[in-house]
Length: 301
Ligand code: PRP
Ligand code: ZN
Image (cartoon, rainbow, N blue to C red):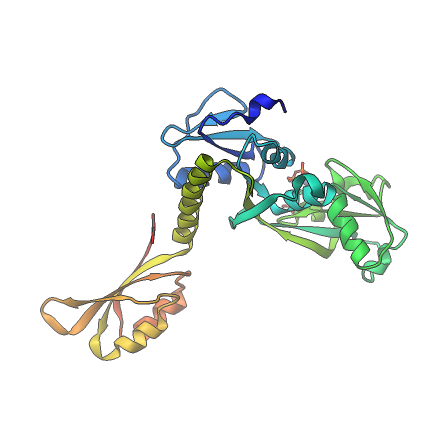
């Protein structure tokens, strides 16, 4: 990085994964937060049309460095990558903090062994060789449990290591589990549960800090709207309290009169959680009718 890249042009910079498992959802999230992105031929930079914001498209392993070097203020990254980077270089990356858990890109970092290898807990790994791209996380996990094993670092295709006799076991990301199955490996111990997070460099200039606040408030609102539902129903006045008690995660529903029907009211509520069929059935059983559950597009308190 040159000193030039430290120049503050008043635009907030976010680093996201160029391609791969987080890329598409990271873009979609920013768009849902009202950021209109200008498609360009530039492979590295993407400018927002309607907000002072630029997006840097980089390799996920490089995202922490883009933040610590003040090129970007925010990043979207898997917790696995962030924690590994911080373990390997605590001094450089310790100042990065996770500010929002995004709920996508869920995966786990696990130890897996060949199906035919007898496995009786972590002690079975003593003196064995484990291949991984996550040396930091694996070494910390083993050290904490007093297991001494050799670690061989691989950049990718870790799952083939046992077949090629490079290692006895592996420690790799598991999402669907298909990679393990098709390579004859059995998942044994989970080292870390991971998902995509927004990270921030805590050391930031004031003008950018306020842009950053705006964008984070919007993203929190998007996430909340995504998991919330708006529920509308008609209820007999006599069972209103029972109905309210069944509404999932809603504090104070709006109750309105229904014209020409004094015994009934309309109830509208924002539910902070999923509304299941069983909940709707419970509402109906208590006397509710015309039950409508709709998604919420935007929400700001
Ligand atoms: C990860 C991991 C496995 C695969 C697991 O690789 O290394 O290969 O995903 O996913 P599954 O359980 O759904 O099969 P990734 O796709 O991130 O690419 P990489 O191997 O190049 O890191
Ligand atoms: Zn892989």
